[in-house]
Amino acid sequence: MSHPQVIVDANTVEDIVHVLKDSAQFPSPVCAVGSNHSTFPCGVADGGTLLRMKMNRILNIGPDTLTVEAGALHIDLAKELEGRKLQFYRAKGFWRQVTHYEGCEKEL
Image 1 (cartoon, helix red, strand yellow):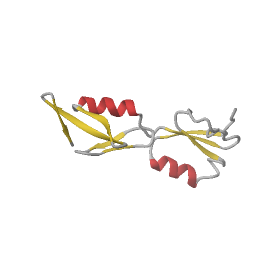
Image 2 (image 1 turned 180 degrees about the vertical axis):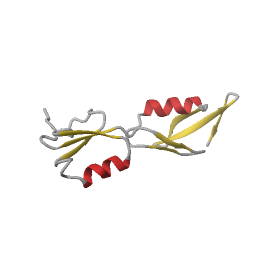
Image 3 (image 1 turned 135 degrees about the vertical axis):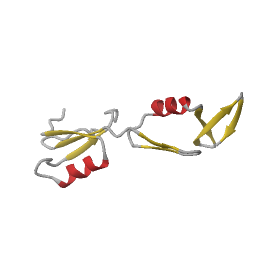
Image 4 (image 1 turned 60 degrees about the vertical axis):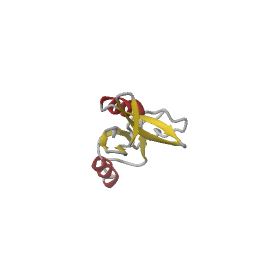
């Protein structure tokens, strides 16, 4: 069990930079956690700062790219793509987007 002195929700890169630059307000160790599913004790920050990563936004959906923050969940990405009539599919070890036009698939 961890007993951090400070807990911070990081919503932006600037939040992370602020924490790392101010050791008086945010003491070491600084440990970052996402959804806390790791089998490694990432969230152990006894006496330090626990940085809860809340960076999960979709930043851009391009014609053949998807740019997201590190905490974005695959299910949320799939739902957003679905709303745009797009989806993921797996080809040769990579995830790609596909779009549907009247029953036909067209690779982007």
